[in-house]
Image 1: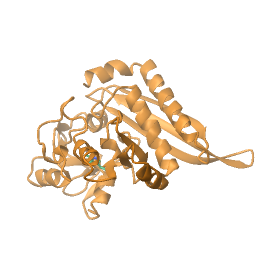
Image 2: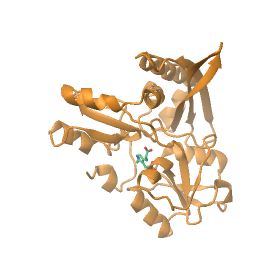
Image 3: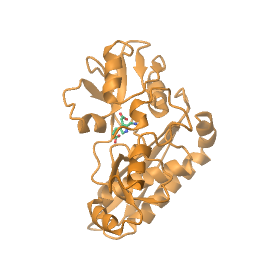
Length: 282
Ligand SMILES: NCc1[nH]cc(CCC(=O)O)c1CC(=O)O
């Protein structure tokens, strides 16, 4: 299905841009044109549609962003004042934090359109999610992975969100079986943080949840870690907070745990002054 996010070339704008990649697909579910919707979780607004239910998130792809350029150079090898195409304030702010000289310019359209614009010479480089490149099987695309400490991803990046109609109990029962709690816990923490900050998809907010196994008293326990950043648009201010919590993936408690961690890290950022930065980014 073609969504308005694929074809609308106008600059990203607060209200109009909410759900542009997901609305058309949700409408197909509501109209009974399909029974299962597959979204990029990153594109799915945190506020759920009242008649739909996100019942599964399968194993997550790689979460990083990539710098894509004709020669696939690293960020520090770009010439001074290089033109970078990205419509994402999160990406723009994190790039400018490291390279204030860069000339960040808006870009729209699907991946093919963006690459064409780069090859036409409109930009020296663009930023794309590694997950998108891999899902499109563009394995030969010249690119440099941006390390996570320089570019934290968007909440939900690299994950899929599978939605069904809330009253379709067969679909709920079947599709929920492909949920991977380890991935779902990470993205639930990230998306809880985002909704607590009322960031929508546009504010310069980055977040990454990870699960690791830690040895404690001769046993291994899972730990959910969440790190998040809120930046000023020019990247000059960058607040970062993180926290972790034990996670019991075998019980249904993982949801409560992930939500609590998302709230906790959001509070830490608000205490450090995130609100005015988010308001300025609207
Ligand atoms: N906003 C478009 C969008 N939605 C999901 C992805 C990539 C795949 C993913 O992050 O899951 C992309 C393209 C991009 O950000 O480069």
